[in-house]
Image 1 (cartoon, rainbow, N blue to C red):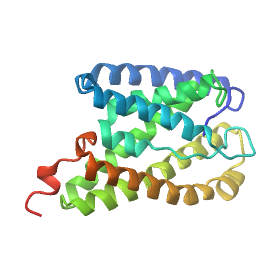
Image 2: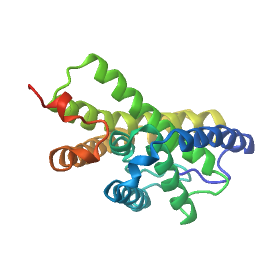
Image 3: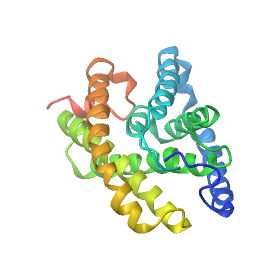
Length: 221
């Protein structure tokens, strides 16, 4: 994750920019900005952006574009929905980029992977799992929060590995033997940390989590 400006071919970066810009504009247009009119919600949204900038700065890696760090995308999506999460995570990528943690020209592809793709996977997992599993508090916590967080970061790791393989930046053998397996370990940490944060939110501040509804997950259970 956090690709540099010279890792992929120039075409990949331009295509990423052309894909990210309309998606970002769409989320700007469709995001429920009225929710942030409440100071508590706006402080939470901005606070999560700043916190994730710090978390993403704590990374490990020995080769360009292969740095590993926690993601937090599933928390953001569960708390604010896909559009506000996509905008917020794009701002996280911007902050990391301006701080020198990623390439400026590579911003488009980094935002697509770390913000766009992660939010897409998170929102689709929530939609699919909510339609087939019972609406129960423990199902929400252990499946939507714990399990989905691990699946999201593994999906981002798989997508970034495939992108690096297709572009010829690294060999397929290296990516899937020496790089992608570490996402399995990272997914475990992501699941526990994200799951615990979401649990604290829904227990003490359920109004902070847009996807959680007391009447659906607690009433009559």
